[in-house]
Length: 141
Image 1 (cartoon, rainbow, N blue to C red):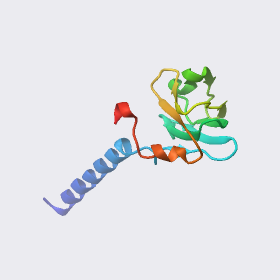
Image 2: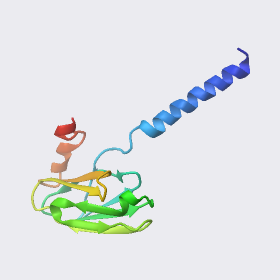
Image 3: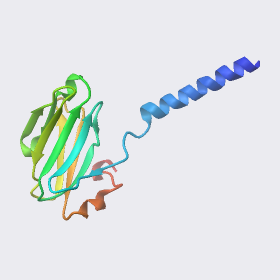
Image 4: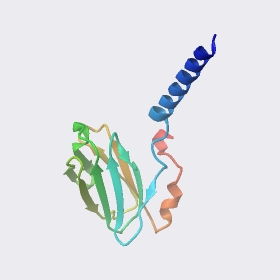
């Protein structure tokens, strides 16, 4: 092998490694905890929800600001079945979803096709949400 062949092989291996990291690597830094009187969290909708898990205090109002950064048909709506919320998300706009979780627990949300999923986890007390940091859903480990 001459030096040019070695360079091409090394460059190819580097590009393959970068591609694997880009498409298969972690998407976010983990759950996001809300703060303030109205617990407000911005969620970017693009190939999923970022963050996909939001930690809040039960009994306090929540305002989720969904910014849809795409035009894919799947992400046109956000649905909270347990709360009876079904909102249209216009492309490249922010849409607010407001509710008050009356009890601790999971409040799942999804897109209209159920391909994108997220959840709001309501905990007791302002620091109660820390209990879930770094822990997966029981069903999925």
